[in-house]
Image (tube, helix red, strand yellow):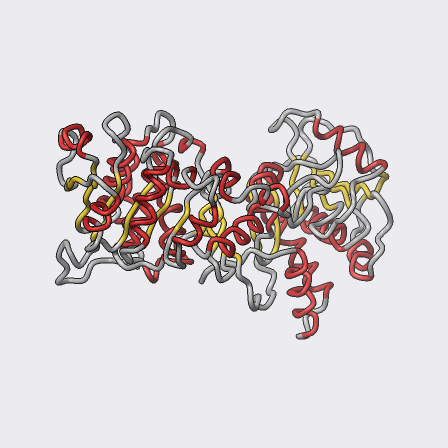
Length: 486
């Protein structure tokens, strides 16, 4: 099943629903604290533990974790920032029979620290001793002093992943419950959280969620595997618009990506002056010429999907080419130069699009087409959703936390982003993956999600030294694994 990503308010509602169905908060707290203890035991050797407990239910989780670790023979001390202030936290604290002492900003090597001060619901900056402790912990190099956070590192906003003030904790491991929150998937929060473990504490399913983790559970059932009687034309016809003679490589990367992802027939449509260059480098990918936008429209008439933008050239010619393609009925993947060509007339771009089309901007291109939207939005998810609604098309906002948003409000965040993808031409292959899946009949939102996930997996598996030319050849092994798991 697809896994939802919840806002703080949605998580609060899930907690409330569980209580209303007869599961007391104390039971949920017991499950949460035990899950923290289990995660610690699974990852760390026996060592002294200090648990920083706040006044709320997050602190209550800490008292429970302390009890379970001590029961397993760990040496545990609780440092309380404030006395427990909720009924459930008071009951958890009362069951802890070990040492409780005031919060201290003195950290020591060889001690494991558990941050149970404040959870995702914190809405104001850290203050006083807690802020001092956060600053002190930040002075240690990562890995020297290990910190485990319960829910989110204290001081991190649960919805944005950003620090609430000038002091916030960073963790090596974060144990959260039921589902990831936005702070666990947006890149600033992910950097603060370290490894993230999601523990099941028995909450009911979340109804009406529209934000999901982007992994195969979201789209695998609709992946376009070929039928027994498939042939190249039933597997989808995709065409890619090439740039001029000195700018042809990007289109070929996209074309090869589309072919590797399963499109049956892939063609590069080339300006006459670039035909010889393209012909010298193409084998299974076909080649056809076009001179004007009218010629391009005719060449694209039998295409199921089109890619325009990779090194296509920025200017009026590319804008006219896209407008001509929009009249053919083929689904469009609009990338790179095709986006920038409309930076002075965005409404003309939006007029060309429909719900089957996909825009694939990096943040700079996003700013050109949706000026000010990233800065004015609460987070990248909100920005991508607003952009998709404005454009009337699927928007894939690239980044370490790539967000895919559909005009109907659905959105997904990739969790497998790889820094090795930060290389020229990588995005061209991504456009090819997406276009190739759409050409095979996959719905555009799911194709964008699947293309982004497979692309990231390719980057992660290759690792150091990756160049864009490597990516298409890495896809078959990932596709074989997906096929075997059907």
